[in-house]
Image 1: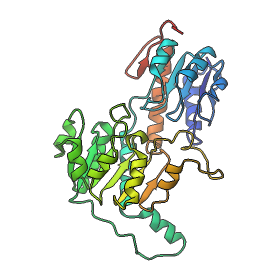
Image 2 (image 1 turned 60 degrees about the horizontal axis):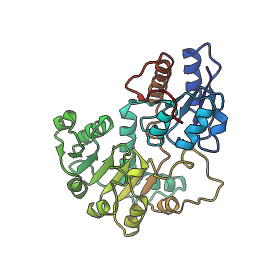
Image 3 (image 1 turned 30 degrees about the vertical axis):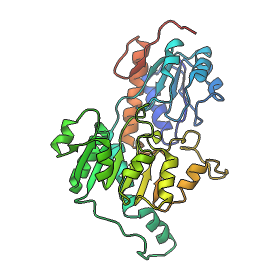
Image 4 (image 1 turned 90 degrees about the vertical axis):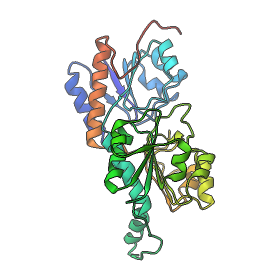
Length: 339
């Protein structure tokens, strides 16, 4: 059995290699590549039965067909989200697909709060100044979160942990989701519709999956509904926010601050060193000019605890595939190829 992994990060690589060496001792060593999987790199997977993909890989019909023609039989996505995979195409090609349906919700929720605090207390600007021995407090005025209203859009596992931390701050909790979470209700969260949440919250944090009906859930209309001094945090999926509309709102002097760990056009950018290249993404370049915006490179999940759980789940997904089993992580079961 031969396995190849794409989009492998420097800190992730030894953990992956060690786990696969112990879990599949009779197999050839796991091949780890730092490049992303797309139409140009798909030929490198020829001869590999199992492909480990990352959230920034492109697995459309063209790429999946190239993988299947090269001998790939399974795609093991090392993330919860899978909007980058054409599941219909995978099924037609008899490619099994699995994901990691669960890993530490604390990793993302805690990082979302790190963004919220950094934005509110101007920590990035203060740090840059301090490195230049400028210790003035001008422009660093923040607000207490205690007593203010937080809106949690998506109250699943991660949203619930975020809400629990907000409760510890002494905040009023508003939530919006298709199904109410009893754990959030027990914290005193009031469930409201989306527009009411946007209008009343001082801090809004997004914890939704990226689906057709959630894409650009924060659009120009939603931004216009928000308070002028609201803080917006997104550690979920970049496509939840219409970035052009967000730039327009910021240019108009609205919103107290924005913290983004994700960006809707992050593929081909995030997790890569682009410091010596010309930035051709005008929207991202404009976004980075605002002093009240903090952007990080999709790192909210990136803790040792979460990586260990992701790797363990990926190993189990492969074991299930080899045994002909399906489980909670299975997205597509292999069948007769129709292409």
